Length: 117
Length: 116
Image (cartoon, rainbow over all chains, first blue to last red; front, side, top):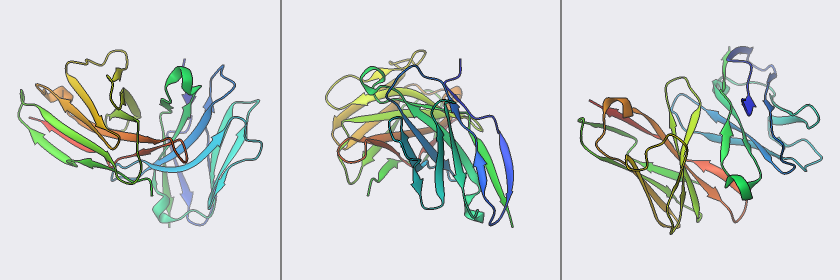
């Protein structure tokens, strides 16, 4: 079974509008971390935001916020005020109990975002 | 901070040769580094976990004799693709775990390997 699911293979968003990228996960661990990375066409993976399973508040980093719904096992990324430079591939990732998993990240399939001027 | 470099960024080699890719954490120490492989329009696939001073841990299905990993210091891990074949052509990305401050994985810029 997929541990990280990103159901939107691609989406368009108008410049200056907000966009929500879906991510659902599957784990039986109590302690885990959720990450979002951006991968532009250059290929580098850019860390955007992190949410710990015990964090009570949703994580925010500038224009990025993570809508963490633990009971639903979802960790959607919200990008506000989209910019042309936001056009990229976005990956959701999960780190399960690091003692067992060795801090490995499991990645979703990614969502390609194209911002239209 | 939290910069990870990879070298080379691109490499083209002949079938049967070996290629070494370096991954360095520039401003933090990383006891653990990870090597990923990414095919076009696909997600990242973890190949192995590189542990400083000990043997790497390979994921199921990854040939350890083909993909040699050495993590000789707290800032350097190397991946050597031995006897490369065209099917080894891919984008290889490393990441380094910052255990001291953020416990986050930071990624290198990747290496595009083309085997002719």
